[in-house]
Length: 445
Image (tube, rainbow, N blue to C red):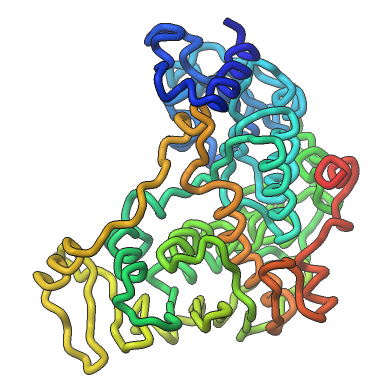
């Protein structure tokens, strides 16, 4: 059975519920190669080596592409060493997404490519595993969500803390924190949340661009025009091309763009705000250079119900709890040697660990999540972190980035997804006119 036939069958069977009664192994045999979906990697930089890309064994790796020839050679060698045999090297990502033998596309490129490649892959009928951040702007994220849903592709962002592993800097999974919020232990009112040093908001401030960077010769084997893609054309420099590319607004937004979806997606989930966005964004700090990312002191994202999310860049709030409820109850990270998170009353009294554990054991747990992406693709069931809730979590930090670049706050309409009477903010929210062709047309046409 060819991939195209298998894929069409999977979609059709899922539509009528066939996979509720017919396991794949019955259809093709448990060990049949056709029982595994196929995937290919777009981009083979550092992140592509991770366990969720090159080494992921839930589907069969069949190919990769990169605009830098040495990376293609390295990828082919790494794939063979990892046990995938001799996989295909595609000339470019367009050839890759148009190959009917590829079911799932892994997007491992810099963030300025994520939106365009997600949209083009969805239009080509692929399911998509995209690196974080989902997109660089609210406008790009909105378009990705629109096309993914129109085409029926399965989509996941490569962050997982809402459903597994310990929350960054907290020492526990997200589930017990969600239990506390979902079951109203913090009172019926707005919550104050402080994110800072413990979640890494300061340790990547070093990823800043160079204000005056010297043009250099393009390395042999690099298609620099393709690497730039939808971004404005700039002369080549090693600092723009290496991992330090994150320090330039054209491609990312420093450590915040690189890591914020890891932090803010689980936060959005535990605050029960997967369908909401902030209505007001405040900023404290220096106004940024138009090209090079710098640092920030503080962002405050306020929701319609008064809930605040504070991103503390100058560590002045390092002793604040992660969550503070309207009733004064506070939630802190797990103590060294402790078993779970800590809770403190408004009067300063700490709950015993036994009381915390007993309370959590008695509280209803959050609804189960779909955490197997291959199962999502096979059964056509949305993944836990998809184009919808992922768009909302990427919007959180993309709004902060707009305030950062403006050097001031602004107001946002979470329904229309536009700034309120603020043309300058709107230009950063929607940067469609800055995209180079043909990528602008591919994205929005």
